[in-house]
Amino acid sequence: MSDPPGDPSSPRLTPRERDVLIELCRPLAASGDAFTEPASIRQIADSLFVSEAAVKQHLARLYDKFEIYDDSGRRRVHLANAVMERGVLTRTDLLASSPSGEAPSQAVEEQLGPARAAAGGRDWTAAFDAFVAAESAGTELGAGDLELLGEAAMYIDRHPESIAARQRAHSIYLAAGDQRSAARVALALVINHAARLAPSVAGGWLNSARRLLEGCDDCPEQGYVVATTALFALLGGDAAAGRGYAQEAFAFGQRFDDADLRALGLALEGAALARLGEV
Image (tube, rainbow, N blue to C red; front, side, top):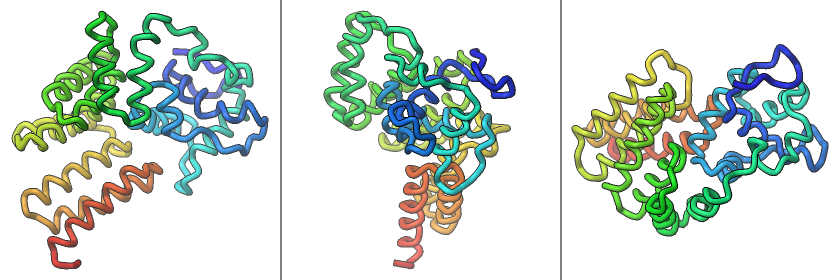
């Protein structure tokens, strides 16, 4: 854990949370204007070579740590301003060449850089091939890279490889005690098995995600649990229940400023309304 350099009352940050804050605030370094728009979630994800879901999770924790509770859709701006005003980061931090302040291994960059760039550009076939080639060459994939590999494999209909990568990421997160990330990956595995028409296995992963999130009633991952529950209700023929869960998922999206979750809630509610005859 690293102590913030400024205000001693500022919250303690993990190294990864600090990386996320650096990328969030990096646009401020160029202008010096505290009200410049900070980096988007996708920009942060691309810079750190992680999934957007992982960035959202870190931001949710940072909002709690910095007590950013507004629901205006401007929480990233308020968080960036709070970070700079309290001296948690300096312009030197923001102008550093890499998020952690350390030069990445050249060998690792040569192996994983193309894979991460392809995933960031949504070129799933190229990303899959590059990750597999990197691992075949002896490069160890961390949990974030395994999530990207799992996502790439899913989109090119390589579900066995997607499942294997995601299960490995899930195990790494569990070993590290990161239950929220483990739950996020468990929910991704629900989709894998649902697509393969294995509802009992998918249901098992959904229950696993629920158990991992016990005691975390107000976090964005719970919204995705609710959205997945809505999907199961619709698949089971209970459109009324599906509609209720979909509306709850949308509310989570509103509360956590999660556009993906809002869109998912609306899409699922639309499907429920169609089945209820409210076209």
